[in-house]
Length: 160
Length: 457
Image (cartoon, rainbow over all chains, first blue to last red; front, side, top):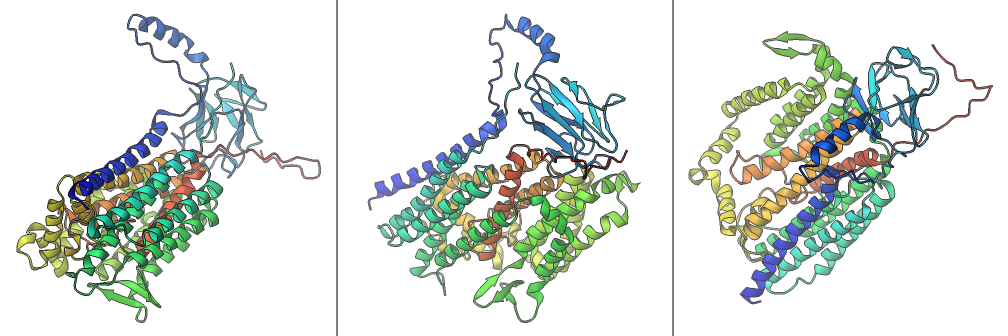
């Protein structure tokens, strides 16, 4: 083995090692920047257009499309579950999307479902009830972005 | 406008690509060792290469089958580390054949066998534990199992004393370090206990000098479990593991209660414990003095040769098979990081440390996205213990902190360490599979008149 070949093998090996590390990082990258299917509208690069765009955005904000169900208060605060087209169950049971560690929540407490355009919340006969504000709900109620739904001591809402 | 569909991605294709690359790194390292040390590709490259390919395909298929939504990056990272470790152990076997190591028996084959057992443990965990939340039911069982495992080496018949620490047991021809298994059991115990008691720990209790102390009955069991385990380890003179368990305990308390005060209390207790250890135990004092001034200490030889090795490696390293890492005592186990530094240089050692960092990052990421508190705590605890272990070993070898005996996960020679680290990866993959899979289907039960659901309100 000549000296040159060995040096080339050495450098080649280090290059492959780093190539491996970098490709692992690139796979992880999608976790950080998100993998949601529809691309979000790109922020305007043109400075002149920017104010008009932000104005339009702030006007539209309450009518946006919810993408996740977020626990905003209670023992599981901060946890969220992405919205799909399937219904989402909340409660203390094992088939709940978010398993709430709240003693005032029933095993199968409430269900969030969509008809493709609008999200509804429905109480599943829970002991302590599901509340919109101070109103205990008895039938499926349509809910929008940022409307607080209370289950036991837990408060959840739809967020973008 | 319809709701955008959020598609949970399995990413098994990305995992396959990374796994191929990882296997290639392992085989290339092995071949390069042969070329560098003897000028030919070693005859049993096919054996090791074949074994690595079988390991990779087997684990990949198992993950595809039983944990399809598991994290795609963890497994390739671990296979790469394991392959690199095997190649380096083989390299030191070759170096010692030429003499200079005293009595020496080759380790590469045994390590290969232990890797196989590790895969078995990994598969067993993924297949048997379909839902990590089941483990929470066995909280106290795992707590007692941890203590039993730690006591085992002190038993008269099976306990063994090597290199001044009584932490081995011998069953037939095998030597095993039960402390490695105890680490996992303790992590499960802490997680299960803290999930139930964290509110009581964080809220009930009284405030003394600005720190909220919890009630004795809430903290009691966990403190007892921890005191017993650390006490046994100190008694067995296993400094590294006591440090690891202590760190695990403090960090899991902090994660569970969200009180930074625990970190302060932990650091103070650690400082006090170190000071006491320094005064009371000769071997602690010796380690400390060796760290301060290795060149003038009788026991500094190993550390000094390790440092010389890394200096010899420089930025790009001597090349696999072309350095002389076998001159350092235990260059195949405790000092494998120094051996890597000599042959792969700073560039290679940094890549290895980044790989460890990525494994820890994945563990913490799993913990962040996990939707149940038990899984969160368990993943955070396992990831942190992994990070602390790497820091203690590499820090000790590079003379950043005093040297304490812990194994470099997946690379160092040592059966129990390899098997148990594979088990940890199995647990992490199981939790991440639960986390990343789509929200569970709602089972609808047909409410007919005979079995009316009773409404309690």
